[in-house]
Length: 473
Image (tube, rainbow, N blue to C red):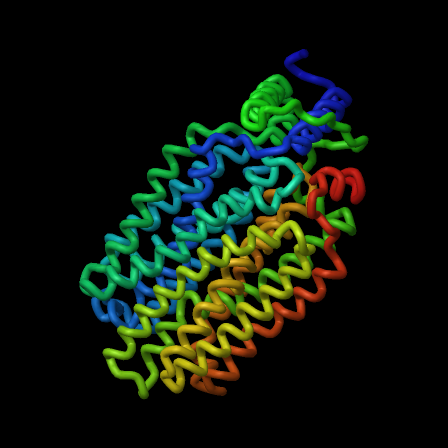
């Protein structure tokens, strides 16, 4: 095959390679790649909730920040998600998934290390923003990479494997962080950030050994390299199952390397992308105040003693384990219920009802009630919703714009997180805690319902079938 294949050769080979991957009966990615992706999510999700513990009422006095400054630092980290997601997502579509996955890990490591060493408000702001950029990019690129490298059959379950490991960051991480924070509040918050930095540097090293995705290699005309990877995947699948591979049927569609932003010229894609963006926007609008400022708000309740605040911090961290368990539970239904329907269910049951119960229990300081609410919020609201959001964002767009379009959806959506974390505490003081916490959850449920009418059923379907072959380029 020539060094510069023709467009027709690329069209034909891309269709063949993707069909060969989609018909594989099992996932054959190296365990090192799975771990590198999973630990990237571990760090991202560990960071999201653990900053709430690092700035809890227990450790906040030792950071040198006021509660207002801590709230701004949280918001700046979330604001960093937006340029991180959009810029790195665009570069991933232009230059490849692998180099950007390495760069996201580097940014996260530098930012977390900087926060561990911070001693004033400006340092917290700068390094928190850098961390946010790295995490924002990682949250985009991990699902983009995995959906492009696993077969269509049970894609949600394969994707879930990474999430189960990654969700430990929201499950085991908060429990560990709460213990560290309570054991030594003076330096515990620094240790929490330092753990994140250490893990990020490890991920950077592991990801350097991963390959580029087959779809991206083929789209860039690197057909020989893509063919070699697929052949190795087929050989591993045969060895793993002990059975011959089923036949494959390449789809007839046209694929081009285009400007990723041209995807918005296609009406079907534009409607999908904007709908997903709004659903995630309002999900983040309701989710992040709970993850990052629930303890900060609870620490200001006049009816709680210092001992009760410490107890709540511990229970909040312990409840994070439910996120990890929720990710495991999702594995058994993710391929049985349409993504959009499951998303709406997760939004409603997990976040709306969970936060409602947790808030009532905290206001009246009913420990069992508050703990049940936290468990419910984490088990379904966080453990299910995030994964479903990422599947919705990556499955419904073409390869040439997958990272960019999801970066737009998730990056712009993080404005919801930045806005809500900045305004929720003043709003609580104005209209009250219960109305505020509940009202912040309602819009996402409405958008979940909208997704049911907008997104196609992607279960078991080839990415190219529901996109390039049906919606066009």
